[in-house]
Image 1 (cartoon, rainbow, N blue to C red):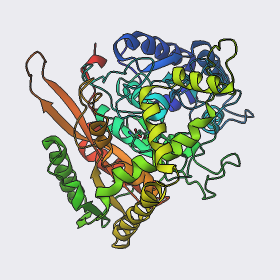
Image 2: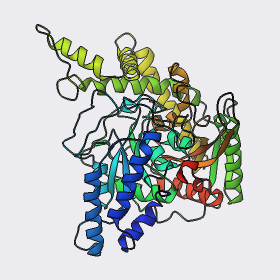
Image 3: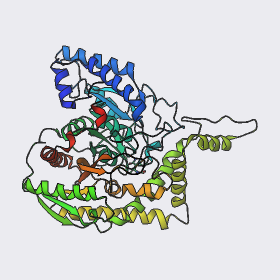
Image 4: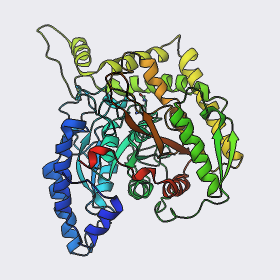
Length: 505
Ligand code: GLN
């Protein structure tokens, strides 16, 4: 098997200059995706025919010098993967649930249309925790995705399939969605770059909704520059998403190499928790040093309400989920249970949902219904909304102190083993302690690889070397700055160039 994908920019430039054939590259990508799927289970569906058709179109455009084709060519011939909660009009969109096992969307998500218009080739759909609910990609009807750095461990989640596909260099980049950390935490656990854009920056039209006030689509890639290329294509106002922002979209790749000298970064006191894994503590300290050495000022800041983020998030996210997932009733979408004679509509709803929705999804729907129910609404939902405001104010205050970005771990530890947190939902939820605040506040955040945890061999298990990431959090619409800071960091450290050993095999 080949060593896998080169960078997005490298592929695009080679296809555009006709030094490489998109069709050839796509065929190699499809072979690699298929060849590694037994080991990783990163893909739930591989779109051979569609991908080859798109690749041929990219080659044809390149042959015409890109003229008169209406395509920007910014992603010419670049093979990409999509988390399987993003709709395409060919193939299925399952959300890794039984409910949508055979669901075919009649339309493309806006992001998909924009990728196609830029010349991208979509090779398949990646695994996720059912409807995006989870932190390990274990809550999938297709079985768990495995971490390319150590297949006995999870890739994180819920965009674990996208993170694993990029880490294994099957594709140079993929899209994920991030409601409470689902791009940034798997990026951290898989040693890749992941960006959660500002709420409203990227259209959610065609993203199957989990929690609509928190959901955002974003890219995962092997390096910061490639993330910037994707964001430049998918960002921007969309009339089909009422929450999408009208803010102008810059070329995020253009200013990315500018120095960061004189810039102030804040490290929240709360980021230095004693429960962090030593490798995470070490990575954060090392990152601070790197930034100082590049002329940035690093100050300590306080996010006094950070301790309430998990509680507020799991009330708000579940409340919104209980409402969003009410549409899966056996009538309009997906699975419809077979009824016995004399059974009515109530039985249809009940049975379809009982059969179609997974355990974690049901847990969340029940929790969300409870916190919204009269008598409990004020105590839970309203209180969580108040906490959300305070959490947002904390970030604003830190930015008012002059910080251009905050430096935080993306996750308290490296990737955990399969099954380790499945029995106890609370420990799974605590994976998100550093990520959910960003969604509650609607801010952009970028995870970059920042070091490794060396895990010694234990009884019955070999040693492993696992990546850890840090995240940079900025004010609304500061993606350009975050990408610039992240780019300087990766140039200085080159953590992102290390690859899992399966790649060389
Ligand atoms: N792990 C979080 C949850 O389960 C976040 C998921 C996400 O961002 N989609 O809700």
